[in-house]
Every structure is written in C-alpha cells, then in structure tokens.
Image (cartoon, rainbow, N blue to C red):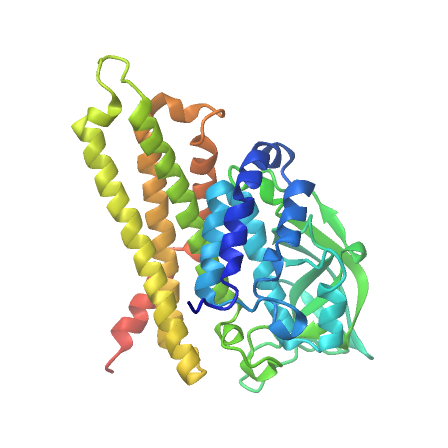
Length: 384
C-alpha cells in the first residue's frame, strides 16, 4: 500500500498523545510545555514535519501535517499550538542556504519560533542592526533560535521598497541567547504555550541569516509545500488543532452521557432524547467541518502538485475553510460544555480547559471575521 510521504508522523503523534495527556495539567500549571513533552516531540521528529527533505525533514504533505496537529490537539491544545507554530516557522529553511539552515535546525533542539511582524531593521555593512521587541512568540520557551519579520530601512533611514512599491520585509534569525524573553503570557486559554515577548538591543544580523518569507522567487526548494507559504499553512494547521480540541471535548461529553444519571431523574443521560438529539446534531456539525476543511486542503494540494502554483482562488478557499472550521469547532465545544452541566466547571474534568483553549484559538488572527469579508469581496468581484 502506498502511503503519503511523512504519513508515519500521524502514527507517531498518536503514540505520544497519552504521554502528552498525562502532562497536560503540569503544562497548564507551569505555562510551559514540560521537558518530557518537548523531548518526546523532538525524538518523534514532529518538529521537523515541514522541514525540507534535503535538510533531513519530513517535508510532509499538508494533509499529513494537519492530521498530526489534530492528534496532538486531542491530548493538549497548548502542545499542538506550539508544535504547529514551530513546525511552520521551520518552513523558512526552504529560503535559506543549506549551511545556514543546518546551523539552525541540526543543532539540538533545532527549534525556531517567532512572533508577529513589527518594527524596522537598519541596513548596515554585511547585514542589519535592530533594536525592537516582538509579541506572540508561541513556542519560544522551547526554541534555540528566534526570528522576526521586520521592515528594512537604508542606512539613512529611508524605507526600502520592493519593485511593486510595497515595503521590503525580511525575516531575521538569531540565537535565542541574543534576546531577552519577557514572561507576559497570562491568558485565559492556551495557557501552556508560553506565548511570550522577546527583545533585542542593537543586535547585528548577518545578511546570510535573513530571508524573504513567502516569496516564491526566493525559494531554494522546489517542493509544493513551500509554494503554499506560512500564512495559509498556519491557517490549516491551527484549524486542525481546533478540530482536535472539538473532537476530544465532544468525546468527553459522550462518555459522560453514557455514564451519568441526571440528578432529578433515575434515568441515565444516554436515555434522554434531548441529549441524544444534541449529540447527533453536534456530531454532524463536527464531521461536516472536518470534511470541508480536508476537502479544501486536498483540492488545493492536488492542483498545486499538478501546476506548481498556489492560486489566489485556493488561497481564498483555504482562508474561508480554516476560519469557518475554527468557528464551527468552537460551537461544538460550547455544545459539549453545556451538555456536561455542572460537571464541566471542575478542573478535574476534561471540559473547562478545552473550553478556554478553544475560545483562545477563536480569538487568533486565523479566525477573524474579516476573513469572511475578504472572501465575500473576492466572490462579488468575479465576473466583472
């Protein structure tokens, strides 16, 4: 039987999921992935899922990456979020010289993390200098290297422009020891991600440790994965995380319904027609969301492999499917949480953390309502 490249990543994710589930309480308490979990992820090769094969990575098809994320998220959303963030960050290797990429990814732990685009770097002889602070660096507490996406200014402070007039933005890369990390992540959900801020002062970045992110002409790898770019890969990966959280929460509600007796009735929850109907409808919603997301990803991947192009139509389709899937997953989690009644509010039960995690996911950029506006605008522009 022919299996997709990197398929065993999904099997490895399932194999370490019980360990991650056992560590989930400590991850939540410490607001960091535990060393045990990080070691398991590294030893299983999961951080290298999207690293080019030429550099010893799996260069997995997008569906395989999504399934890997889904399996880890069933055990713990914070772990899946960090894994997804750092896996996608590793895609920058496709735009780096191999010697530079190996210096970053072949020296343990070989993990790269970065935050949101912000600030400027000044061009100097041989590279760039930057003083700045960035936020939202999920996975930074496990990383050996950090990155930042910065606008470039010349030596005289004049912003540099691309040929189309847009600002020149580069991704700069530097060892984590070059930065100061600030413990700021006190969040309602995804508490264990350690999504902290980091800061550098008058740091020199050699030219060879910079790259253009998501610029097809800058790619040194020819695989279809790198044509998708990090933005859409983040969207698909984090939508898969939301599916994993929703699946685990609904499964917990189903297990509870099979065993629990309602306080004012002798019958079990499983015999309650309202509960039965709610489970059926919610199961349908989750299956529909998952089918839609994977169908969109697979259609995009098929065309990408055939043509070598990640079309604007597929970019728009991915954005719509990912956003809608996250929102639908949140509805599934809400339904399961309310189905569990008072049981859901206790930390000892598998509901309240997943409820908080899911709603933290739904607040991220990949779930913004404005994505619907962008897609609607594109649809209305068709045929003009």
